[in-house]
Image 1 (cartoon, rainbow, N blue to C red):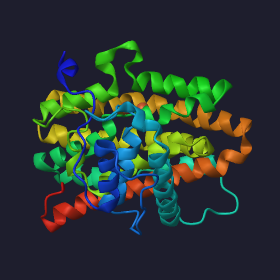
Image 2 (cartoon, rainbow, N blue to C red):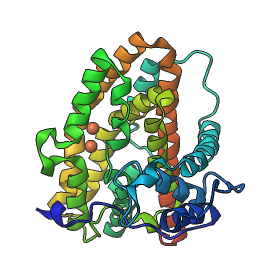
Image 3 (cartoon, protein in one colour):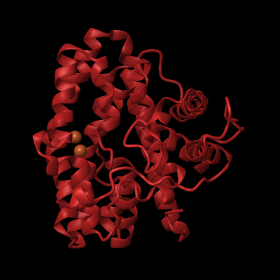
Image 4 (cartoon, rainbow, N blue to C red):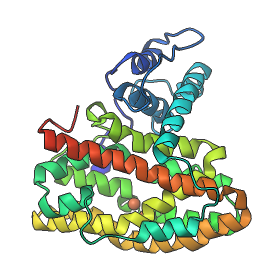
Length: 330
Ligand SMILES: [Fe+2]
Ligand SMILES: [Fe+2]
């Protein structure tokens, strides 16, 4: 029973600038009075993304020795709102203007096109990835996989009828289909252990650069805002559509390296399960939601493109650090 021994809440990270410093000081010392100061900062930097990540974590498993009541601290919520406004502005800039008419169907068809000789992170890892590079990937992806499928779950009460039923069917699988040891979050913990990495919840939070935090903050922001429910659904659809081929490439790289079975198992599971999830998302979730709320189609497409923008940032960040020869982790 490995998971019974791993810490269930996260350790507070060290601050990386004035924004994260204020959040952490508020959580540990109650400082900041009636407001925290939102200094001008690049939304795509370590300090902003860490501050956001810490604010969001209060809605997940929280932090060791931090009062759970901080989740609804109005000062932190106001501060987070301002950080979100800047973050979403930067994400929308990265995505660019959507065309006047958008089609979620066309978007999903495009997401399904997989070039044989593509150039992304998973192609690189399949063909040339070293075991050390895979371990970098695992450690930095743990910021998401330790809470895999949790951010999307917030959309459930915001959906109805067929879209809700199908969405929950996918989430049910992500959460182990009734088996604790099959929860994808737990499969990833097994992977971390097999790779000789720390298995505690969010153990690598201190090591994650902004580009490893931003993809998770994007999902948290989408999930926590009812107004962004279309984007949440689009984000999950894009995740599931791109997962089987991406996971297949990572699996091929791990097989080439003769990696431990638990590491292969996580990706093999995603090759198989996500091929089914993809079909459910396309027709029963996205299709039904658009029939139900046609006005959400733009946000669904935005969610898909935002997913790609943040995944690109992650891939560029990680590959860039390898090319530069500097450690991927902070
Ligand atoms: Fe999964
Ligand atoms: Fe899935």
